[in-house]
Amino acid sequence: MQRRIAAVVCVGACLLLAMAASAFAADTNSNNSAVGTWILNPTKSHFQNMPAPKMERLRVLKDDEKTLAWHLAGAGADGKAYHQEYDGPTDGSYRPITGGENATTVAYTRVNSVTNWIVKDKTGAIIETGSGSLSPDGRTLTLRGSLKPPQGDANFTSVYDKVK
Image (cartoon, rainbow, N blue to C red; front, side):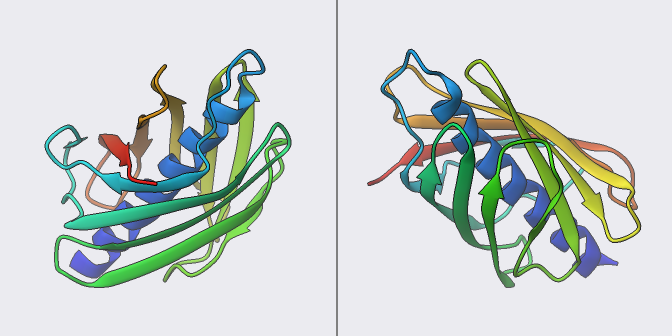
């Protein structure tokens, strides 16, 4: 059970990161892009009803109006390492997130400068929703979302600082 909770948390964090990255690229009046390397800032992040990851590093490889590609590596609250990836469109179609313990799909959409996402599990049930945005100076990525893990609904705000 603890392992499943950690997996859901990891999937949620990954999706949020990807959405935030997309949000930056969506603003056509901005020079900001989420392409780069991001580290989770645990002091600025909040995780309600779920364990916080010990560490997360997000690499956004592609972030333009129509596509998003990211790699996420981290360690859960239990210290177990995880890795997930996404490379696909931001057109609202469901595409797989690879590398996770559980089969999940995500659909990304962009509205102005905000990227939104919905994650479904292998049965098609929605297990996460969220949105992401980039600070005006392009140094902080903030992802906000809601998860539906077995132990009850959980909300999170993941704040990432740009390192490269």
